[in-house]
Length: 344
Image 1 (cartoon, rainbow, N blue to C red):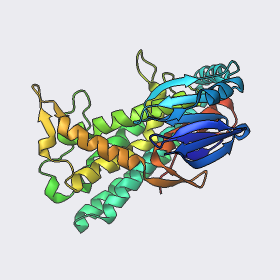
Image 2: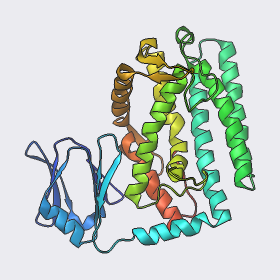
Image 3: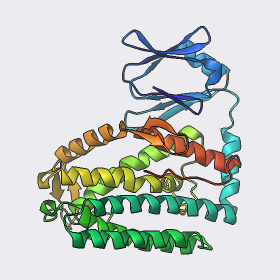
Image 4: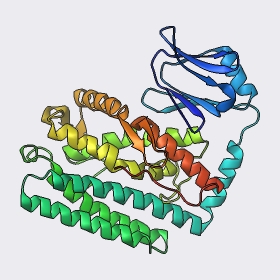
């Protein structure tokens, strides 16, 4: 259980949230784990099998506080809102912001900068742990290239230029990842450029699977914050595309999904037998492989990190939710500019 920015997040399976006098009480196996005054809360977010008493549901609705239900994986399921809700005003602000070219470029610069800084940290870590001096030097050069791309984002005058910088940096970054893989695993895991539909190698198949779970987390986070996940700033709007979730995902790709993929490969937790090759050259995780990756993903999401802005320790699963709220504040004009999450 975590209370952050006046929202209570309940993640313990079997927890029971109910009202005691004017406080929200959380019990686990009939023992009190947490008690928070109701008037301190703006909302309650429940992951998976969490029970909520009907009395608490009614009080939340009466007082205009939200109740959001997510699956264990973080996928959005439902939201209960009272008769008075600020969501429509927030979504109106989001649509106005999407039509403001200067605002769109400013937020997109922050999104790309966050992605590049976090990607650079993964490459630098790879350089420190490199097998040979030559590989360490190569990775250091790749990190310097990412730093140059990062500087270029500040001067990008429009979205097309920014997307070009991001695309070129991403190509260099994925080339670098091949050197972060341990030598004994390179025979089986080689990233031949980023291929998506379908993935053409095992590394791509693993990344695609992790990115899809990360994207669901980001989409849920935007829903929880009351934002429209379809209306993005950096990614173009297309039918059926959660463009804003893709925007939010950028800062987390390298430090959550890529690092987990590298760990699974380097520790031998995924092997050749966890992938199937399909007709036409597609490579996919099989059922056994998916089970392994989902288990590792759930464990990774519970790891604690310190949020650099809030200076608060929290599990990784809450990071997209925090950043979505910063994005909402930026859209409302309560923050001067969006500040992405930067891993240490």
